[in-house]
Length: 304
Image (cartoon, rainbow, N blue to C red):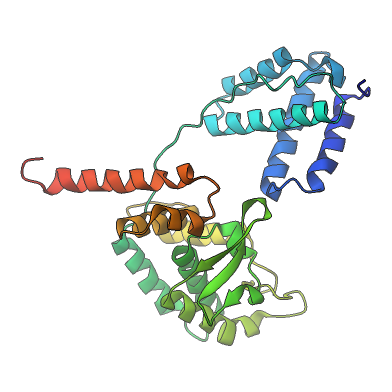
């Protein structure tokens, strides 16, 4: 026997369910709830206000409307995932007699090869950052540490800004990051990143630290933990004048993975470094390496 519930009430209860911990990242939870709010608004406009009246046809109509708005396939795929998760929970919690989203097919995301920054461009970027990383410029010292860590570790920007002082193990050149789904992993970093990080902690961070800083590793001039937007702006500006063009911090993650594979690193080792749940996600970087090889062959081989 099902429990009568309207859609607005159902989404509110589902939000509590997600907050209780389903292993989803905060960003995914936020996106799912925004998607479901859109579904509820659409359904109510069609006269569907109760959970028991939410059917597959209504859901498909909502997704069709989203597709006509020109949304990316990846966005449509996420919306499908959000509603499937929601309807599965409704059925399991006995708020719905059947799981209406079970037969919903998710559009496959178009997979494009990620942007990779050349070693030459990276060398120029680090040379410029090193020139700015002087004692009288704490921001410059921090920015060098940020970019060194992103490239050395392949960490997501959300993982980087979430680091605390105790996350860093200088004895082993390893940092402990909290990845997607609240999964913790250990990530190594090299000597240049170690030196940049040590300089930040030793000479620059104390100039900004105050009662708001807590144990946050990377802080701004007001003493607060730096945010994703600040790192995005930094990296985008650095890349604007390179052949790569303006791109976000994820391009450093892409570049780290690709350069590791180019250098002969094992695919599974790169998977662990990046924190990918599936090896298939990591394999896209092998395609990048193959494309780079093919391009180099076409340009250099006399009989290409």
